[in-house]
Length: 287
Image 1 (cartoon, rainbow, N blue to C red):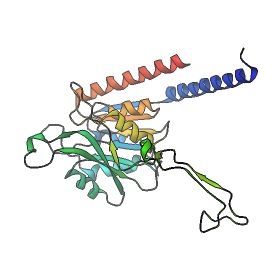
Image 2: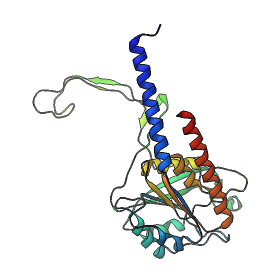
Image 3: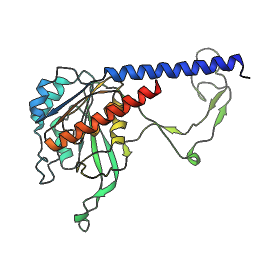
Image 4: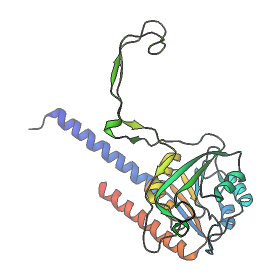
């Protein structure tokens, strides 16, 4: 026989899950996705001032002969980025040298730091005898004022954890300063979690017909979680197959996507719609 206290705890837990599910359903129902086909320089002026919380873009690097791989003039792009950004909007752009230097030099005042995406699947095999294969790309973070930052901790291997220890009553020189009486015993336990590093390891994705420079959804989830909150608006003005849009939808963010190539645009639209349908079905099932 289940005790009354246990029933109360079980009911409370069930009610909490139900409320969270209802909130998630409400948040998802309020989300908006806007997709634009065509040149982003023509569509960005349509976006209202100070309306975007996070900009992520995998711009063309100009390193291939592909028709879509043409560098967008940053002197035209930055005024639009800054106009649609809020006061604390981060602008995250991917790059690979020498394009990386071009991006940094296009706005050195707002460049803050670099992340490295280690993609596990190297490229450049045709030049393997003359230079190292390339297994990383740069992720550049620009902003004016400190943006949202939700660090996603990772857990280290058990054998690398520090042993817990207890420090006895201490004074200013042994523990920390407290006005008045000495501090009580202080216990330090290492739970094995660590703040994120600047090198991000997410395996490259491979699928038939994928965009040649497609970034993995897991990487985009990580960046969107880190630099925005649920309900925020995320913009990608070169969305390719819609990876950013899929991650944004999965994380309950509004999404604005732009893509010039008609075939890529249609694929992105289908993928994002499929993600929205899948999430709606999951929420309906949970509720």
